[in-house]
Length: 390
View (spheres, one colour):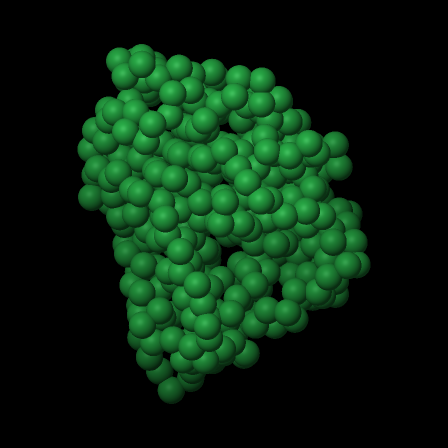
């Protein structure tokens, strides 16, 4: 087990009706003026935004609003948020929505404390030193942004999608009511299941020292998501299934399932370029198309870990042919993705074959990096994964 720092400062308010407490929660923290940040309609149509504002009014909390966040959140809106946050001197940014809204809020939060574009953080030209605190009311179980230290933004001028990690990106608190995910579409529910699983899959499949406790946690989470996902897809208002998915979403990306192991998350890096160039592609859907082909190239680097996954998560019956058992496990997850109505090829997602080379080039930051993961992903390997996923 390698040295690690495990930091989870986010306070979680989990369960039915917890969003009703938002006014008193904000008041207890001492914030007097906040920004409400959200997407383009669901929080309005559901009545959640109206409820939040009423609870803030009851507790004497002032607020300004910035809606309009797109999936794969854009730098242009972040810059508007930075300007608004500075002008109104907001003390907290409350993100109401999913991972895209949260990432946008996190970028605004660090951007409001500097006199340059927060894109400089995304491309690693600068490191944030201060921020406005961010909190969230989560409406979809997917990205894990409510407890993670990551932030991913798309520059809509260059179509580059970049992320940065910082402990300043962790939410002060997050409100998680599984009932708020009942109206999430089957497609977006599937995307969330894939993204949640991928956050742990890319931590679990790594080469490193023994981490038995972490591995058991990771495999247990993956199995719980696999089982709960099947139920939630068929019964969208099954509270227990939605609760399992929402809690797994948070734990999968807060560092718990990778503690003590080195990891790179190469599939995420490739997918960021796919949805950066094609912003209409949902992140989870892109991951579903890419992971099986990455796995088929990576399993020889740590066959024992793939075997455990096949047996303990995917339920493959052990045989004398271990290679077949591994490949059957990978295929079983691909089949599961199909059952979730997830696309399993880039072609299904509308990616054009003549852009694959550019996507591989962008994954390598235009020749400036190589991803030294369980397998080394350089330009040639990234291109092969993209071609095989096409």
